[in-house]
Amino acid sequence: MKATDLLKRQHREVEKLFARVLKTEDPGERQDLANEIASKLEVHTKIEEEIFYPAYREGADTQKAEDAVLEAYEEHHVVKLLLRELPEIDCEAESFEAKMTVLQELVAHHVEEEEGTMFPDAEKKLGKTRIEELGAELDERAGALGADDGADAEERPEQHA
Image 1 (tube, one colour):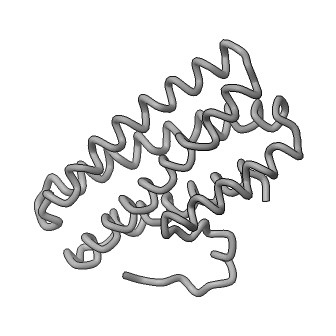
Image 2 (cartoon, helix red, strand yellow; image 1 turned 90 degrees about the vertical axis):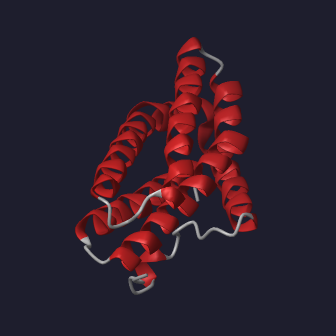
């Protein structure tokens, strides 16, 4: 699987979780979904930072790639700050939905930039073979971190927390 396809699948998984957490009124389900979002984003940011971004930065070797990677690291930093606050938020508090909406918007902006600019450029500059090698590396690392990359998500019934 191409690295970019694996990362896109992870993006879709998190988007679905955001939609669910913002729809539910059940505090227990909200907490479970918030925890799942945090877990998936932690794994996703880690594998991008450890594997994908350095490979893209080196392989593309352009100022555009350098700028995109630096911005992506900063966006990850802001997401991580919000993720640290999630365990402290009362899922029944009125601020919960606002905090989740802000996190969702940050992630959506980041995804739009990656999928619109970075991923196509990475595929072009790194080539098919390297993108597939990175996909295997990302998948292996995500697995080591205890994550499901979502590769078989269409084959599983949707699980509710």
